[in-house]
Image 1 (cartoon, rainbow, N blue to C red):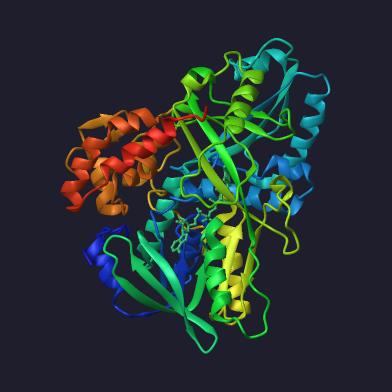
Image 2: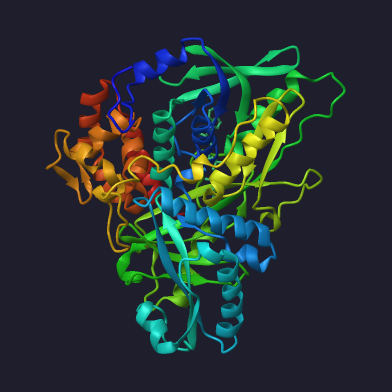
Amino acid sequence: MSAAPADGARPTVRADLMAALAAGQTYDIAIVGGGATGLGVALDAALRGFKVVLVESHDFAKGTSSRATKLLHGGVRYLAQGNVALVREALAERATVLRIAPHLAQPLPFVMPSYHWWETPFYGAGLMAYDLLAGKAGLGATRLLGRGKTLELLPNARADGLKGGVLYWDAQFNDARLALTLARSAAAKGALLVNYCRATGLLDDAGKVVGLQCEDAETGARLDIRAHCVINATGVWVDALRQQDGEAHAGDGRSPTRPMVAPSQGVHMVVDRSFLAGDTALMVPKTADGRVLFAVPWLGKVILGTTDTPRNDLAREPEPFRDEVAFILSEAARYLRRAPTPADVRSVWVGLRPLVKPQDDDGDDTKGLSREHTVLVSRSGLVTVTGGKWTTYRAMAEDVLEHCFDKALLPRRAAGASAHFRLLGGAGPMAQRYSIADGPGLHSYGSEQDRVQALPGAGRELAPGLTEAMVRFGARFEYARTVEDVLARRSRLLFLDAGLARSLARPVAEILRQETGRDPQQAAFEALADKYLRLPV
Ligand SMILES: Cc1cc2nc3c(=O)[nH]c(=O)nc-3n(C[C@H](O)[C@H](O)[C@H](O)COP(=O)(O)OP(=O)(O)OC[C@H]3O[C@@H](n4cnc5c(N)ncnc54)[C@H](O)[C@@H]3O)c2cc1C
């Protein structure tokens, strides 16, 4: 493989990655799924010195992990449900991510505006409990606000009937870039990670899972990977691999594998900053139908969302329902001075939450389902992990490895390194917090900015915050293969402004063609961008 720079970031030459995968080694751990969960396990295991391989069928974070509300949070709503342990763990993890990836995450103030006299003291008391739970991991004190201060922080909040508000602190992050950084950091620690490589089956030896069958999505080539321990971290798709595991061992008297995931869809819509100026997010604690809604400033735009709608098909690109769009727009209109209309929406995107069903539950009320993660180890040794949230990916990884040790799939090695290991780009003076008002740009590369700037095209801006050099960096160091990989996940333009992203497909495709020598799927991206622009009527 080509030489790695001094700080460990490795070039991601596809031919080298596939050759390494085909080399026929036996790994300690083979992970299926390159979202937050699988990537977190890959890095944790690599930091403990295990030999790790991870395969992702599409691109890293192409699934749910690029479609979050971008909050690192304890979950105010889970506190209201009395789930203190979950909140406390998430608050500690929030602080960890802020520490290990300062270029991709930052504290964010939220204001909950009150339109009834009782709301400020009522929600204020709850949020003070949130502060107490955070303890040393707290980011700032909750404060009760009068009407004037509320309008100062949220100049676009609806003023008539406003009584005051509550200020509290959480954090926000760049989900897909954090995923890529986890992948690259794991690779820097010796793990082999390959995108566009699907696990098609499990290898079985005398009733035990001993590896994976895979297929290179680019060439159709098939290969086997042998490993002492196989982790199924495929998000809402975990039941497919579980089913194969169950079928392989049918006839041994066990009951058929019951689905463990109840997917729930969440829609986000992005509008311009003029709808929510200032550096403060707006939180609606109880919408007309009892949910939580956010308006969050993010990379120069505002994210509105989200919804919680049961959905049983496992679409790769789920589409919003008309009711969901109408719900978000009407709730935004209740709280914002200027109501966004469908014409104001720059991008609409949908993610599927992998909520875990109790094994005796067939209902479809996903609002009531657990937000905690679950780890199951089958009798054949397949370790499945799903549920949880982005914020807790690291704690989930530690729990997965604990299960592997408990079942003697791996020799026990101490936990904890991942809480202190600075992710790539996250150490040094260039790894600074960006400003809430900043759009996309070099700040997302942290201490790797110089490396980006050294590539051809550093001075050629394709759009604000995206240069030719960044596209080349994506192809050379960040596993990018297609226009979508660049414009959806290395840069976040598809999510921020799908029309702008569409207009960049051609120049990005030309650069990628030079870098990879293959078809970067420009037309497919243009069709996808059209989808992100289209609201259901
Ligand atoms: C609308 C919404 C908003 C959210 N907001 C937040 C938030 O603000 N903060 C927060 O902390 N959490 C949030 N979450 C939760 C968080 O995004 C998820 O918990 C997390 O991203 C799940 O990651 P994952 O790796 O388990 O799943 P995924 O990201 O879906 O990863 C699974 C991967 O497995 C791959 N895969 C599937 N089958 C195969 C196969 N056979 N071979 C190889 N690969 C395969 C998929 O392509 C996919 O990339 C939100 C979720 C949703 C839906």
